[in-house]
Each structure stands twice: as structure tokens, then as C-alpha cells.
Length: 459
Image 1 (spheres, rainbow, N blue to C red):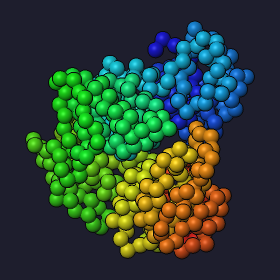
Image 2 (image 1 turned 120 degrees about the horizontal axis):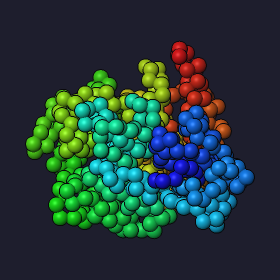
Image 3 (image 1 turned 90 degrees about the vertical axis):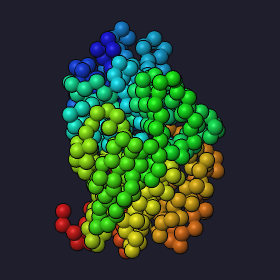
Image 4 (image 1 turned 90 degrees about the horizontal axis):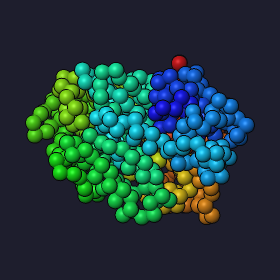
């Protein structure tokens, strides 16, 4: 990239922000717009980015209005009516989607690309950590803030490997050129973009065709994807208990999960999960397989899995006491909710589990209302909030109520986000979990403070 000035439309997104950090690390001038100030945008400002929150061409710094010097990177979530977007387009600036830029940055590296409806952030983060703490090392553009490092960007001066979370939204992952591709799942999602489940699946199959002919595909055993790879690509399957890579001798108890990793060539015994939830057995099987292919040793793998702290907002323990447990999880698809709730119930089989869910997108709520209700019905107590619209305008007849009416838990309530804190304070809680990909995370500090007071806990 020859441009000295990089301007971002949607700079505060988790994927956009790691690109912003990358260009800052390269000594480029970085500025941009986002719809709201967040801890992530505050961090970017502290690192040197210029950011504003009102859509106006008057807010674009003058030095970024010279088209010969400025590259504009935008997220597909930016609406076509956005005035800054239209100004840059009408004045002939070079404009690229985030995925195009990421593909360009990684095309000359050994790219490890992790795709899937769910699980991709955790698996890519695990892979990055396993490589980073080993002699192999890596670069990484991650879809979450990895707690081991406090960032979503890792850079190396000795490794040619780049770990990338491969986003299927808007077919973004079609810009990538994987050396190793992982597909964790392909349950239908983003039907506002794809239209049909078949088109969604075909998008993953096209992704497999992009793998280098000396590369690898690691496919979850029951993922409904028929690979379309070049000659020479090695295909492996994985899951928790079957496939070319799997786990056996699983032991769960005393807050720990220990298992043996099994493949045709290597067995690694007594692996202790750093984030001990059931779904992470399968996630770690995928990550370990990738790490082995990349040259990480079995001993380095055992150390890496046990020291892995996970990305923020992926089964994140906010409070963990005998009297009260508070977990936050990014789950926003029915399958993710189902897996997360099952993991919680296995960890706390004798406790009441209260779940707070903020649906994300009107279209996803419309398309999967029945499935959301089925997953939420596993909870002992369901608290449902209004839909977080993100990039969408309201859809007539679509609200959280269409999920709520299908939930068959004994205890359920539909309330406004502003009412949540007082409502929780009025209840006796044992395990509480907040779910969603919207702005529910802004409530976490207030909920934590309320619980600490309510249950007389010290900081």
C-alpha cells in the first residue's frame, strides 16, 4: 500500500480496528468515522488515530481530502446514504472494502484463515496464541480482543504466517488466499445477503477453491460443505469425538476439562483447557491440528492450550464466586446460543441459569425466531431485550416479541434495556449470562457493580 493517509468508514468495528492498528504500526496517518464512541475507539485514539462520530464531510481532516495520498477503507455495513462515503466516491478516491485490503496484506504470507458461522473467533484466537507462544510465531488479524495480549492485532518480525478470521458476511472471505483453511460450521446465517441456505453453503464451497494447491483444508466433520479444492490440497476432518483429529478420554470436573488429542500421527495426552467449557474441546482440536501442521511441538501445544485466556466476550467470566456467577458471551446465532447454554449447564448442573438475550439484526430475528426460541427455552429463566438493529432499518412486524411468544420456559420476561439493571436487582440469581452481538456489553460494568453490592462481594 503506497498511500500515506488511510481513512476508515466504520473504524470502530472489531475487524476494521485491527487494520487501523496495522497501518498505524506501519507509520501511516490514520483517521476515520464511527457511529459511536466505544472503549475500542478510545484505544485507537490513544494509539494515534483521529476519529469522529458525526457523519459530515466537514469532520474529515483536510489532509485526508487529497485523493492522490488517501486510501479509503469501508465496511459493508456503511449505508449507501452515508455522506462521507458518497463524498469520497464522487471525488474519485481509491475505495476498498476491508476484506480486499486484508486479502492484499496477507496474499504474500502463509495465511491461516478460519471461517464458520460460529466458532471462528475462538479457533483463530487459539491458533494465534499457540503459534505466538511457540518457536513458530505469527502475525494475526483477529475478530476479538485476545485477553492474553490485550489486542486484536499481533505482528511478528520473524514469521511469515498470518492468522485471519475469515468473515463470510458479504462474501468477504472470497478475497483471501489460504494456505490453511478451517471451516468450523456452515449453519445458515446472513440470509439478508445470501437469500437462501444453499447460496450460503455455496459461498463456503467457493472459499475452499481459494486454498493454495500446496495447502490444507480442515473441515468440521458434520459441516454441510462439499470441498471444491485444487489438486494437491490435503483435506482433513475434525470434531470433538470423531474425524482425522479428535479428542478422547475427556474428563470434566472441579472446574477443569482435561482430554487427550488424537490424530493418525500424533497423540497428546492430558491437555488442560485454559477456558474450561465443553465447546472449547472441539475448538481446541481444530487449533491444535493447525498448530501441528504449522510446526508447533506437542509440548508447546500443551502449554499454549492451558495458558489460553480466550477473546473478550467469548464465554467471559465477569464474576465467579460461590454465591453468584456472571458470564458474558457474544452468542448471536441460535446454534451458538444452544452450545453456550449447554456448556453453562454442564458447568453448573445444580444452579439456576438466567439468560439475558439481546437479538442482533431484524433480518436474523425474522429468519430464525423459532430456532432462537428453542435455544433460549433451555434456560431456567429468560430475559429478552429489544432488537439491536446494527446496520438495518426496522422490518414491519419484526420485534423481539416474535421470539418471546415461542419461548416455553417457565420464567420469561420481555423488557427494555433501560429496565434491565433494576429488574436483575429484584431477582434472586445464581448464574446469570448476557448474550448478544449488539451493545449489551455496555451494561456489563453496571451489572457487575450491582451484583457485587447485592451479594456483598469485595472487588
